[in-house]
Image (tube, rainbow, N blue to C red):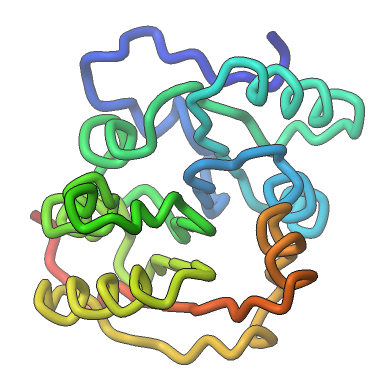
Length: 200
């Protein structure tokens, strides 16, 4: 399907040329949902490449159709679990920004182990980001935000950056629109892989 990124092999790291064109920054949207954020970013930044990651086939097909209909050749969708993509497929130092927006907070204590923001995930995020690359996390769930803050602080491999909401173009996701209409607060965490970070 046009707009879908289908790797030649799912059990090896992707080649840099498979996911980004030379001289163009790559941004990855984990759990891209209905694609509203992905499409708006691709439209606003034609000079960048984008990959949306989404595990549900119906959503992937809908987003691909939207990309094709809007003529957005700088964005594709990869149908896989976000954790697997970050930990196993993304090449080292290949991503300029990685977005994790409004993920499932798994609020019950017995389900906390299912939360994405954990040490192994952060290790993989840091590896995938180029030096100076950013990891952006946003949630309406304060407990998950505090959890993520603590995990990132304990990990220690990132520099914390301010993110008040207007530092750069960052359109709202479908979930963000819904939750803000209900009066909920969005909690934001923005981190950077240090510019002088050595490769692994």
